[in-house]
Amino acid sequence: MVMIVLSPSLQSFPPAEAIRSSHLDNYLRLPSQVSPVESVNRFSFRKASVFRNADECGSTAYSITGGTSVCDPSLVHVAITLDIDYLRGSIAAVHSILQHSMCPENIFFHFLVSETSLETLVRSTFPQLKFKVYYFDPEIVRNRISTSVRQALEQPLNYARNYLADLLEPCVRRVIYLDSDLVVVDDIAKLWTTSLGSRTIGAPEYCHANFTKYFTAAFWNDKRFSATFNGRKPCYFNTGVMVIDLKKWRRIGYTKRIERWMEIQKSDRIYELGSLPPFLLVFAGHVSPIEHRWNQHGLGGDNVRGSCRDLHPGPVSLLHWSGSGKPWFRLDSKRPCPLDALWAPFDLYGHSH
Image 1 (spheres, rainbow, N blue to C red):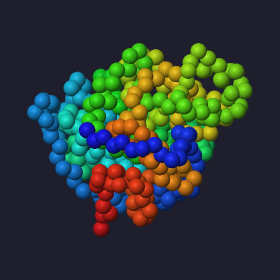
Image 2 (tube, rainbow, N blue to C red):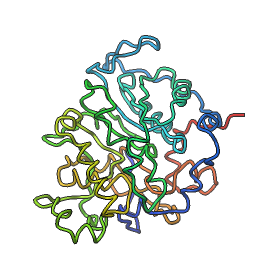
Image 3 (cartoon, helix red, strand yellow):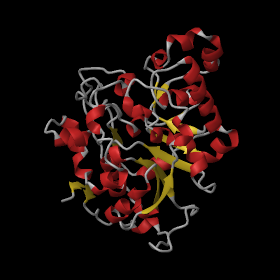
Image 4 (cartoon, rainbow, N blue to C red):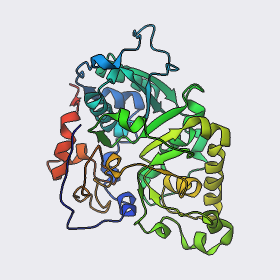
């Protein structure tokens, strides 16, 4: 386990500021005229080291041709999106998970993609990795997505997390969902074994945040909408790190509930952000709280300038660069923040020639 303890920051930033509009979004995206295949060909990644289980882990039978059954009960399931614009971050996230796991061969990755050409790249970077690629059709959500305060939040793949219960095999009853702009510096098995009690999702909660700012005045002034929080004590949580009970999700039908709020948003404009508010509407106040160490978020800055931030005080198991400032961009531009140095060791990126 890696433990990082810093003193409290001299500045305090509400979590909401980690997802506001920024001109930096334009720099983080590849030119639109470049085809997906051409974009993939512009990337090359160094082959990762082979990570083996410790003796006490046991091992799952696996071969590249035969594979491991996704239904193997000994597996830890992790879902991450693979998107051209954040591919470098996703690869670093996987690398960090493998490097800090006692039983890396017991981790099964579920990659959600809207471009199928990425599978070969993943296989060449992590030859021994247990994974499966799931195609998420952007048309499923395209007509449900509203304009957001930040363009990057409008990408259809951001909404793939809403459909994990449908995309993954029925035998996968629990999954850890992770964003692409983070690294794990602890054994992810500890997060996997978190008890959710009677809840469907678990995540670090931030009850000190001003919850009202996540929704518009039109929402709070209309009892048809705001009454959804009656009888609840809703707190902000970041959807970039969640443990999800897929069995319970499927039984209750949470995807339809999220879709319903997205449809209301189209007609009544009840929030300004992207995929986060529907999750808050459905789950806030019904979340199993997980230690804050598992989502030290907001390291991407204030989204106006992508400015630097300190960590919150206390131990750290996961570093999350939510916000507009991504570490790979700042490192490449020779304007890194101090904490970007903690992301750099997991970066396997190199331009192809």
